[in-house]
Image 1 (cartoon, helix red, strand yellow):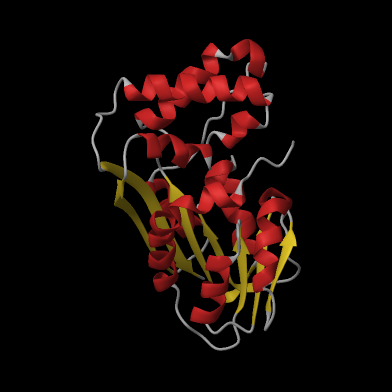
Image 2: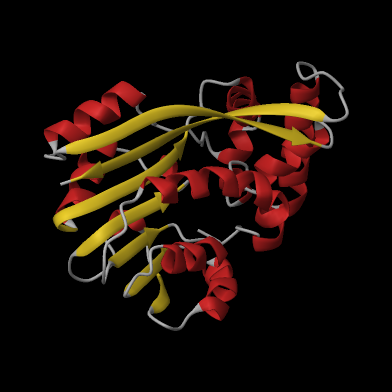
Amino acid sequence: MPDKWNPELYERFQAERSRPFYDLVDLVNHQENLRVLDLGCGTGKLTKYLHERLAAKETLGIDASEKMLSVARQFAGNGLHFEQGRIEDNPGEGKFDVVFSNAALQWLTGHEALFAKLRDKLQHGGQIAVQIPAMDDELVHQLAVETAKEFSQELGGYVRRLEVLSPVAYAKLLYKLGFVKQQVKLQIYGHVLPSREAVVEWYRGTLLTAYETQLDTQTYERFVERYQQKLFEVLPDERPFFFPYKRILIWGIT
């Protein structure tokens, strides 16, 4: 698939996207000489903060997008480095003290098997810290699915659906996998955006990239236009626009 991730577009909402990241970092217990794996590191700016905040001995940032990594590599050094890889391919050699992932695992299916893989990458006493958006049942996502169905011929029937579990299901999964302590919570982040148009730009930088990889430029722009039209039928035209966003924060220690 072509790499349609756009670092500039993604970081347009850097302040809003960073808030859950910092909350997740605060859940991690500080220890000496930590070896940290950051899955879905994106542009690397937050991975650098993670590395420095934990005073880690080594931090490896993994991302599938070479465009994102081209930005991230400027932060490499002093034990921090980046590699291209896919989370589902089990990247990162050896065991880690912390497996961390902020807003990346929602793109993958089969979370029971995925979390078992992540558990296997931890040293004894290791920690997992994961933040997962939980918006698939909200209109902003449902209308993307409806739009995809209208473009079914152009997309070859492709529809991007996320398979995020409930907070209770993640809590049960951590227990099953042998985590002796855990925190799992649903957090609502209230983002104040300039307008409802900003919601469309938000999703152009994330969810809609899946459709961008499937369509030519002209058809993709028609897709976004139709998505916006459907969205504006249900979102009030308010300036500023209040955008509540649900996220699941998960922490556990073996």
